[in-house]
Length: 187
Image 1: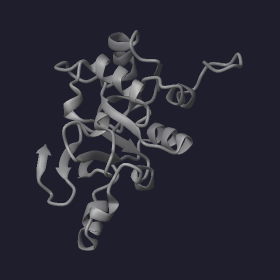
Image 2: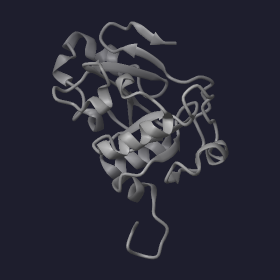
Image 3: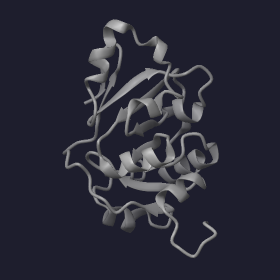
Image 4: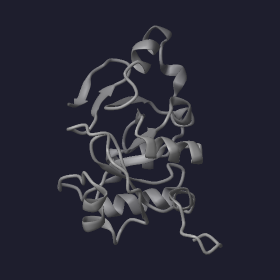
């Protein structure tokens, strides 16, 4: 924890490898520092999620995602259509930077990323200079939490910090598509 007497912030918990619950567009997410494999292992354990599935990275802007994406693999003629899909609601699967941790990519050579306008996430990403790992706040197979109160009831023992904000009010989780082909993986 922090050395002063004040309560730790979401940034403190993120930096220390903790798990944060936070609002996204439609549901609450669980996340951590994408560069901390111990934190990701803890997240996968909480979620009972296999490492092979890979994870989504959520950011306030695309530049925060550049360390994880092979940006050079996006053809010039596709860049406008790819970036015009953001912010919010569309998770795009990009070629991953070579050597990226399989804790993020799972069994794939790609990485799923999304840029959001959700103010709590944007603020956290700006303060840390990084995206946050994003997976729904629920146990695998259970419905995702839509409020911080639901997160508190279901997962308060397992998460280190809950951002008590509100989702953007979307009615369904993000659509997942291939950034380059537009193929839909999840509607």
